[in-house]
Amino acid sequence: MSKDKPEYLINRKDNQYEVVIGLEVHAQVTSESKLFSTSSTKFGAEPNTQVSLVDAALPGMLPVINEFCVKQAIKTGIGLKAKINKRSVFDRKNYFYADLPQGYQISQFKDPIVGEGKVILDMPDGQKEVGIERLHLEQDAGKSIHDLDPKNTFVDLNRSGVALMEIVSKPDLRSPDEVNAFVKKLRSIMRYLGTCDGNMQEGSLRADVNVSVRRKGTKEFGTRCEIKNVNSIKFMQMAIEYEANRQVDLIEDGQSIDQETRLFDTKKNETRSMRSKEDAHDYRYFPDPDLLPLEVSDDFIEKLKLEIPELPDEKKKRFIEKFKLSPYEATILVSDNETSNYFENVIKKSDVKLATNWIIGELFAALNEKNLEITESPISAGNLSKLINLIKDGTISGKIAKTVFEHMMEGDKDPKKIVEEKGLKQESDPKALEALIDKVIDDNREKATEYKSGKVKLFGFFVGQVMKVSGGKANPQLVNEILKKKL
Ligand code: ADP
Ligand code: MG
Image (cartoon, rainbow, N blue to C red):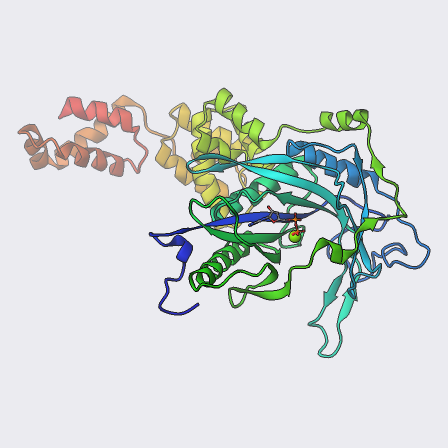
């Protein structure tokens, strides 16, 4: 991009263009064994230790469909409010690659197992619906390793044959932020369902990102480029920004966009051409003669529906109605099952409003700082509710509670014990407070006179002094009341 042009044209104020994005998400099915063999799918094993004769494509080996993976795909379809196709077909997608010993990938082309569905995004200015085009089952390929040896490429077939769900969105996304929300929501739904762990570092969730631009107000879509295999949300967003701007530059230059497949270079932060877009017929798709069409009954689907847990959208609705949370608070608390479970455990025995604030505020900040997940929280839900009750019944002030909270973060200790051991109990005895207040007024005679002659702003000064002398333990409400009387 030339230097005299603004870096991000699509972010430009007089922005004439709109970016259009559609994702093809590859989600690894949570399953102990592969799609057509009994080999383990465990991550991180020694190379080529989880490869059956089927996965290595030795002659004469026949694939056998793993029923569990089929159930996982249907459950995901139900979670996406999608149409489940009772009849689907496995096709061979033919291409040559060193880490694809069969010479074809078994996938679904014309008749996928799941049809149209939708995902609801919670954006700052309201909800947005993104269409799902389809979800199909397919095998993953093996892995070529180019950086272990200067002269040779190694092939690890552990991943060969692992089940993937390819989830294709409609071109409904309009910004990197929406892509962020979409991937997170999709991941959250699959985690609730237990159908994909969504672990992007381990490659369980990655996406091909289709990007085009068009002049605002135009009905027709522009020509798209497809950025292959992006494995982090951050990279997806960076790739979209770069790609949209590249396309706008070309159009402004009077050139046209070639439909092509591109790669995102994470070091240079740019996309570059891999190959011009191949057509479906180049893959010579045809139904795999080794596999019968996959047929499932209504009964089979109905039984799976009974296994579907409460999903994020429904849970959010319940949290708002039952606990009177704001949509913002509810969205955060339902983002994953572990967080919502933690929240529901805390409020079993304590005030909802306080619990919400403490979890979203203090707890998340503290966990973030220590880089911990909610499941690794040093403070158990039970102890957090005890802390909240100590605030609620006036044993400690909100300020002291923060100190107690810090001690709790160092290990899961009962807050009552911490309050006792450190002598942090709030002073709510009016007699004791009066004595303190008398002393503060006595020590600040001049200011007291000024206050009485009309300098009311000094009231805050006196409250501060009393709190200081009490080591932060004086009950602020009582201090206010007594001070008013005394002054
Ligand atoms: P292919 O296999 O050729 O990539 P798919 O139908 O599997 O085709 O995927 C097409 C993807 O591209 C979908 O996610 C779709 O939403 C998206 N898409 C289609 N047209 C456009 C466009 N003009 N701009 C951006 N994305 C698009
Ligand atoms: Mg594609």
